[in-house]
Image (cartoon, rainbow, N blue to C red; front, side, top):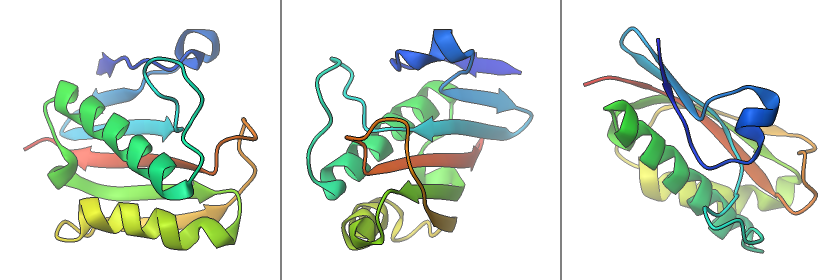
Length: 124
């Protein structure tokens, strides 16, 4: 087991890692649209999803993997109306990779978040 830290202010408080490498898998925690500089998240669902995916990609790189090795994503949106924008961002990243994906409508911890994404990847 190898832990990969991120910049979420919740990691130390809640006791979780941005990602955990276990065997040949990298498990990336639910990733909210929290900019590294601590500024407010972008307003639009597309930009929030793109930010989540960038943060996931950075964690995967630090773990020795990458977005091209993702085999599953779980996407949480706060309103079905956000799906088109979130799907567009997801599709831009995973159009060729096409991981197994699930989308759930859920209430998230911060009212400003419209999306949160988690991922699982393999090590190359």
